[in-house]
Image 1: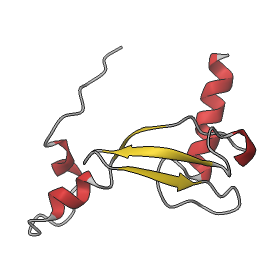
Image 2: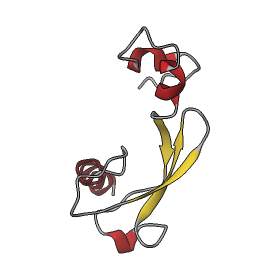
Image 3: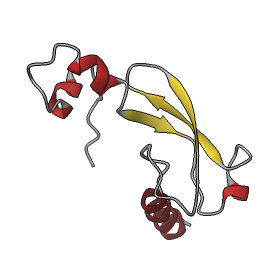
Image 4: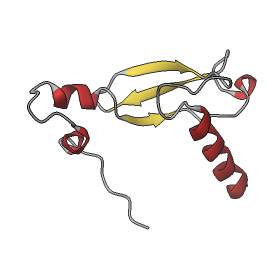
Length: 93
């Protein structure tokens, strides 16, 4: 198994408008790097009322609430991502 280092400059592959000089800073603030464990039920989260701290590439941390009825707007705290992570957790146990 190979794990590549997440390093400065990788965000340039996520920029869609190459003519925007602020695109790199915007991309860094949108790429999530690390987060708390997520669960399908909000009551099981580490933080009540169901949410997770998410660390972004520009080093800011944001608390993102999980809404099981909504699509979610910040990855990895979306309904689909939570379902996929739960399948992985179940397979590892």
